[in-house]
Image (cartoon, rainbow, N blue to C red; front, side):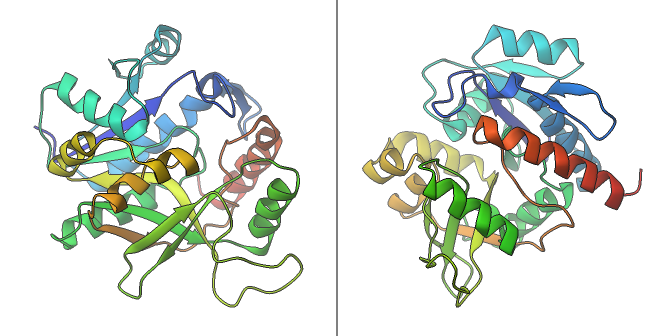
Length: 272
């Protein structure tokens, strides 16, 4: 039984960017690989950082993704097509694996620039606060990232997700809008927190999430984590220092060249 089970949900039917787990991204070495490769590498690095009893697996409902992942040496578990989001897929994957770890980490495949240290941070937050059902991560948006979010909004594209928290560090709300509101061209009065596709759950919280069922805000925003808040399940937010590269997620095809540029920047910052 692993202490921590890292699960990477991957599906073909993304509304904004179909088949994005298999979209090719060129790494700093000049080699193009499917996007899921980079998240898998983050998962392996996070497992090493967390120490013993940590396992990593790709959870998918698509045989094409499974074949690509298995050919590259990734562990795969098949999950039902009926899973409505990554959290439901993690719950299904946990059931299929037949093991109950201390906690489950959901490392979403559209966040290939996630530093492994952030995985450690959400695990530590959940381990350290028994009242939390789930923990997630955020970073203060840099001026460049804020400008990118505003550019997406002005063009009618859905970009990254932001989060606002209580003084205790509990999530109050998540949105694909920029919250709190920032008038373009002005300086924010407080940090805009960019939410990252990274979650750590207690297994019981995953079961409670599945039994609660979808809610209207979750559907309207397209953000699965809002179901935890609707169910009254406390969500902790680990505010992590922004790395030396920009935390750009793979939400739209236009993000590909931006992410590729950050791969190069990251390689120049992180020792091999």
